[in-house]
Length: 635
Image (tube, rainbow, N blue to C red; front, top):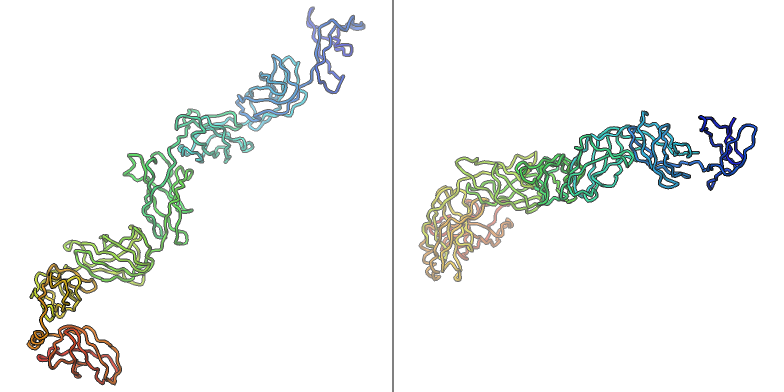
């Protein structure tokens, strides 16, 4: 037998491989528990039962420490192989045949230093989730791993199918739903995605076929294009793209900013169509799943069709019903891409309860429109969008007075086509018209023909009063008073028909401007107020007291008009001094006050518009007071 002697201590049997070649297996060095430095010894041949000639001079053999493997990064990779790993440990040697051993499969290794080598995981036919030990050795066997703590786990082959949404704001933060295959729950903490050349972004595991990931900012992608490729990884290192490289993500500029919403308020019952406008830099074309968020409630939104051909900047949505019908203000924001990207414009939308309309006044107006109509009720909200509607006609002007009253101008109608009796409604936002009280009928408004006056006879009146003027025209049956001059005193209509009214112009003071210029004539119609009739009256100069007295004695047609009694409540014993006010009183013998049909008492003349009478003794009750001018006994 032939032996190999490794120094003076170790003999191992050699194996003949021919006449000129034998092989030996090196013995285990046990001179120390560990080797801190390499130990070299000479190698010689020894035949059985002989002594070696010398322990030196032959070829040398070096004993080195066995490698210890502590870890591998990454420790997870596809069964298809190809993961570039770094193996960490101690006592690695720089050998030309250095290799990593994954289970039973060896692959070449690259020496980095005594504590690190690099190698690429081999593909293996193993079930996903299988783990193998990792060693560092040399092909020749000169380097062996004495102990390893490293394991490499094989996972399913990773595939990327789709992402949603495929569009997001340039500042990042869009939450993407990523679908694919091979997502591992046991390594959910390693799942990641990448946009362009961005750093790895940790993903959220959902299922073996779904995960979530937040987009980085466009700047973080290190891309000069707004559209970037998307890749996924189950170890933060091996990036997998879609099969056809067609899964991309596009950034839009700039982030959306709301500049206006119309209307800005609506009823708590919802249903209001709200338009939201964005700034000039916005473009909504291509964005998916646009939604309006009214506080915590969201509803779908749509791009306005008329804007779709250009850069879309307006969307429309229907305000949702307010939870528990609560009034109040909420923030209105817009989201795109399924709620991922949300505006932060903090636009306010006010929910209000439907106002209740109880009654209106006046309840009629003219076809030409323009009358001021007071609408009474409760729940009226002060708003710049306040409008009134008369059937289908919107009021040209509306004004908020209080929570229980608004004022609207009646619109013009076409008497030949439009309805004459219509309902009246109020909208706080110009869109949603409120309801009436359920216990009260809808208030109605009647359009009547416009009154017209074509002549006044006489057109000249005494500045001292007493002139009886007749105004002729049509649709005059609702006239209640006249006024001569914008500064004049209103006087009651004495008689009226649909075509004529009688009024007595009141006296004017000596410094009245109407002694120098004509006085415009106004007529007050029931509930509506004074309207100019387009005619004027000329006042004659004042007469002397003597002339007035003579004229009054000769005026046998003077018709007195009573407008007021002061006081209008006295004791029944009589003797109270009553001021009777009105017009057309004549200072002559027989001037008297009448109390009911039977009692007449003398009166004292003060002016053509005031007399004084003593109250008679009468039983308690309400009684009509009249005036009798002397002479003709006209009452």
